Length: 276
Figure 1 (cartoon, rainbow, N blue to C red):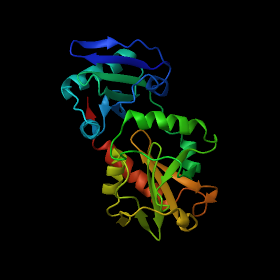
Figure 2: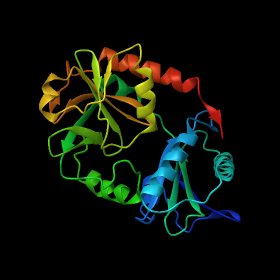
Figure 3: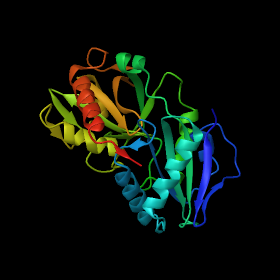
Figure 4: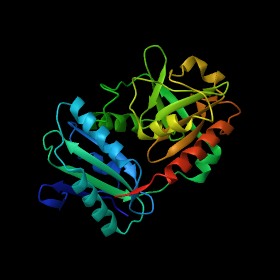
């Protein structure tokens, strides 16, 4: 089923000129000078922390030097209409605002498919890279989205995600995710130089009572000493990582603490869903 893209203007929803098959394809038409957020629905029209997504979108725009002028209630209603009219059931959606048209939002939806059980059972194989830098990691901007697409296109198919390194070798975040590593029962993740992901925010909360947390970035030199590792994003939740740069993490299978955190994460989500 194709993606559906519409423009929310001051007069209401209007069809966008481009016809695309996916959110990824739709993103190619978006200007570099803009900001966006991506999430998914549950039970067709329920969302998780949508206001947090919209607040981050507004914060990202402020960092980019402009201010979106779109009422959240209108945006929610427009998104709900698109979802119900599509008949897709659960959807993955992107909300994008261009600096040149701050009173308009581009809304894109596609059918949502949760991470396959096989990925959770076997875990993801990932890599690191120091070849790319985000101008402002705290902002979710279109220019990084375009840069990331080119980087991902050259990645081997067996690599699920790439983690960015700073000059010291600290492992900051993935192209589309936040990163966590576990050593001796403690969870480590970067405190700064990363996007404040909504899924990351949930993990920081559910860690309490499961494992101690240290806001310090894991280091590439310690990969062999990681007991477990995982990545997070809003559309995927927690994904176990079992190898980085060809080095097995722990025993090479998803770890017990990671799976406990994933279960707690899913419970937290299920208790806090809200209607659009």
